[in-house]
Amino acid sequence: MRKKTSILFNKLIPSIVLFGILISWEIIVKLNDIKTYILPSPSDIIKEFIQSFTLLMSHTAITLFETLLGFIIGILLAIILSLLIDKFLLMKRVAYPYLVLSQTIPLVALAPILAIWFGFGIIPKIILVVLVVFFPITLSLTEGLSSYDRELHEMMIQLGATNKQMFFKLKMPSALTHFFSGLKIAAAYCVMGAVISEWVGAQKGLGIYLTRAMSSFQTAALFADVFIIMTISIILFKGIEYLEKKALKWRI
Image (cartoon, rainbow, N blue to C red; front, side):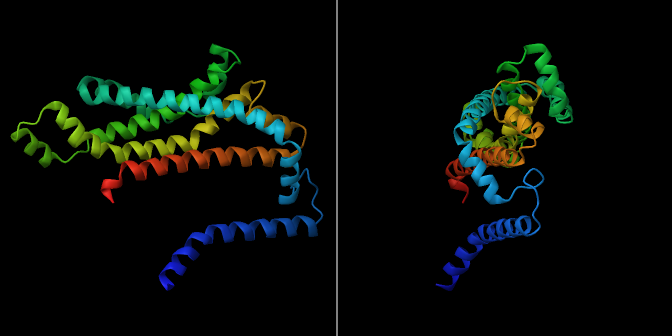
């Protein structure tokens, strides 16, 4: 009984801390009469969220579409390139250094370049999300495919295992952990990729809503927008985490 109570309390700690922060925030803003455009209280943000719910959801739908489509395309391309790198040594020598180098390029620098090349429609937004997703997954999966147990590999060769059996029985299981690590990193940043691309130029989306709220000093609307961005990112991350637990059940 005591153990169950302790586990429940540990799970509730983050919620308790968050609740305490929100209450303290509300009290500080109200007692010091801080203007809404400087720092809105949590109640002001909730009020703004309710009032602008329909508008926020219409912007959310666009960003969510860009994020999910870019996420799926990025995963597929990452898997294909990782398999090619694993299959051909020359491909690894050529592509791998550039994959590492690509991680040093800031998204803010890429967004305007893509806008110049592909215009201000949905295409550059999806491309930026694909790039955000593609590189961490490719690096993680490539690393995972080469991190299998060498002794087990030798034993399977001695037992006459085929290349197909080697891949599905040895390489793939050892690569899954790395693959899901890359997926979680990509899930945490892909929404931000879509939002940053919308800053450069868009008609709808959470990114353009964010810039409009900022330029008009609607700070409560800005916080509401950021809350939605965080929520989408957390849901994606937790979804990947759930799939990881299901896929790697045999490791537990």
